[in-house]
Length: 385
Image (cartoon, rainbow, N blue to C red; front, side, top):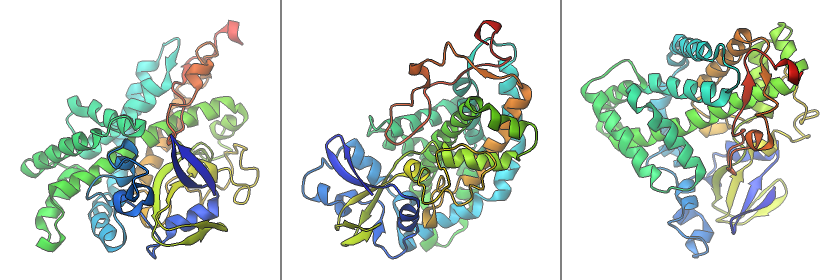
């Protein structure tokens, strides 16, 4: 556990693997999500502005399964669990492969490109567009929503996101397709009255999917490219076939997860975490990045080892709130990375562009990925070798 100061707001971060796993797995109601106005003592007692962007973030989207607990969480999650299946995700494989190939073809012949901007970003947005049945011209809205949420600079983004997605649900009720939104709307129409979610709650859950399904995967893909290029010995192990790409992806998720820190759970009673007393009403931050470097959980945790058995990492969370999008993220990573390095076997970081400002992490206390990843698709120029 570690004390954290978030611009004057005090909180505790759960930094060790087993402690974080325990908090995430809680089903007793000791740690709950959402309801910051009621569950966070600092808000109740006027220490934190209830209208701040931080409170809006930890309070979450009304009706979202992210901030629901217990039976209500189960009720909200069930439709998503039923229709966002591995089978539906696997059906997206041809789209992921086609998008990846098209984006890589556009990079062919380029002298220097930002692989994050030219590959990671459009790939993840393009996959979400196909999954949700969003019109292509509206695709940029999805990425913009996720970016603004994680920047913590625009509390109004939640209302905008919910409005956009409620309109999408209404469109798919009237004109259904083969996408996830159409499936959720049709299932809701066929449900008993007591089990119906309605457009507002469906949209709230879709907001969560957009946020979790874009920024996180895009960032992990960017991290993975840079990690492999800065560890050529590890890259060789996968490109030569000594290690399966699926295994390497799990190590990328463990060591270079794009999710550094997420808010939050609140303690509903005086309790203890990892030997530290936690009073009622405390906000606990979920420190995934720190847990990935816990020597109590991993041997030489700072070492990037693509052959490591990284099963059990917490990049997708754990317990009742285990990320629904984990299969989709794994699909995108295991398609995108091998295709990138097969298409450009001499891929190299652009040492000129990989300056401190380009490689520096994005300005976010929640996310960890570089602002840019500049590469030479055909290898480093002779002068740089």
